[in-house]
Length: 593
Image (cartoon, rainbow, N blue to C red; front, side, top):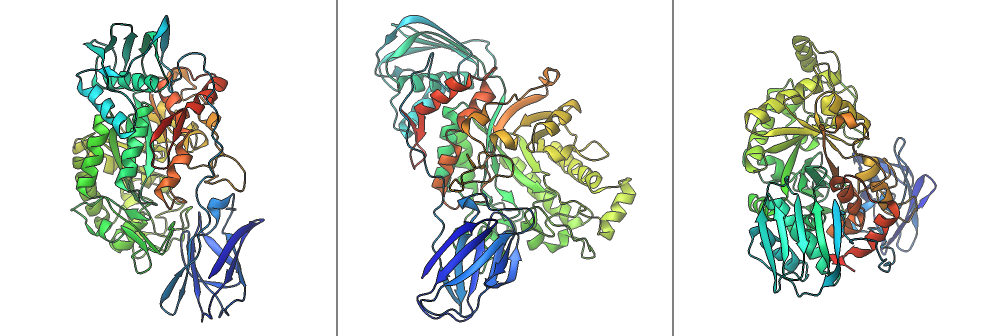
C-alpha cells in the first residue's frame, strides 16, 4: 500500500495506490482542526479534528487522489498540519497508512561558544569571582537536598559525588534563594530552605560538567515563586518515564511547578474511583472506542495514569523541589464528560454553538444536577489526592453563545440575575471554586475565569494569562494573583519558524528561543505583587510519540527559565550563546556540551 500527502496551497493532496482491489474503503484521519474533503470522496462522519471520508472502489496499482482542506479560517502551516494517523477501513479490516514524518527536524549541533561569566541558565543574581579555579572530582556532602541533586545527576549520567567537602549552613534567605562560596578548602552553601540548598546543588552540578570550578561567590534569588511548565497529557498519553524525565529537566532549569493537564475534551486520564467511567471510557481513542481517533497516530492509542503512577510522579517532583498542580476542565473542554454522561446537558438545548476545535456540546450545563454531582466528586477526589493544595479548574475557550439555547440554563440565569454566557460562566466557575476552597485547596483557572458580571471566579484564585499579557494585567488590577503564560512567548508547541517543513502549531506566533526572552512579565510596576510567576505550556494536538516532545521544548525552555528566575533577562546575544551548552538526547537526558 502506497500513500503520501503534501500541502498544496491551502489544501492537502493525499495520494493512495492500493496493492489490491478495495471495495468502498473509508479514509480515517485526524488533523490540527476540523477537516473537510474537497474532492476524491465525501465525509460520512466527523468529530472535531477527526474525519471519515468514503472513497470509491479502488483498483490495485491505480492512484487515487483525495484533496482535504481545513474548515473555517484554518490553513496548513507545516508538516504537523497534514493528516495524523491515517488509515483505511475496508470490509472490517483496518489498513494503516504511512504517517507523515513527524517531529521537528533537529538543526545541526552548534559548537560551544565562550561566555563572559558563568555558563548557567538561569543566570545567578550576582557572581563575584575571586580568581583561579578548582579542579575536583565531585562533592562530598550530607544533606537531603543535595542527595536529591546526586540522584538526578546519576539518572542523567553526570558527575556530582566526589571528595571535595561541602558545608551547608542554614540562614534566613528567602525561599529557593542560596549563596555559594567556592574556595580551595571547601564549598560553602547558605540557604534557608530545601529549595535553596537544592538549587545551590543544581548550580554546582551544572558548573562541574564544564570543567574546573571557578572560585568566587554566587548570590542567587529567584524573581518569581511560581516557575512552571505545563504538559497536556489528554491529547497524547505520555508514558510515566517521559514525565519523570521532564521533571528532571525542569529541575535542571530551576522550574518548580508542574501543571499536569490530564483532562480535556478528548480524554480524562487519571484513574479516579468516584467517577471511574471517565477514565475507563476515554483512556483509549480510536476504532471501537467511545471517542474516535482525534489527534491519534494510529487507529487505537492512549492510556491512563493509575494512582500509583501519580504518587510516583508527585514523589519524584517533590525530591526535585517541584510541586504538581492537577487540572480538571469545566465548564468547557468537557466533551469526554458530556459524551459519557449526556445528563450533564439540557436535552432541550437547541443552540448550535461549536468550540474552536469543532466540538458541539462540549460544555457542561450548570443547570443540570448531574453536572454538579460529577464536578463535586471529581473536584474533591483530585483535590484531596494532590498534596500541593492547588487545583486548576480550566475555564477556557467556552464557545460563544453557550447555554443560550437551553431553557434550563435560561431559567437559572433569571434566578441568579445573569444576562450573558460570560455571566453564567463566571457564576459556574465561582461556585466550583467555592467547593475547592471549602475542601482545603486554592483554586486556579485560565484567564477567562475573571469574566462575568459578578467579577468571575473570586475565592483567592490564581489566573493564568494565555492569549496574551493583556487579560493577565487586567486580572491583576482586579485583585487576582496571575501567572503569565502568553502564547506568543512561552507556548512551546508553536512552530519555531514559518518554514513549511517545520513542526508545530501557529495560531499564537512562530516562536524561536529569542522570543521566549524578549518580553517583560511585569510591564506595569504597580502589579509586581500580583504577577506571581511565569509558566511555559505544551499542548499535544500533533504529538503522537513521546520523543517528539524534546526538540520542541529545548532550547526554548531556557527562555522560560530565564524569565521566571532572573530579575532582568540576559542580553539576547549572551543568552543565545548559552543555549549551545544545553541539549537533550532522544531519551530526554540533559546533555551539557
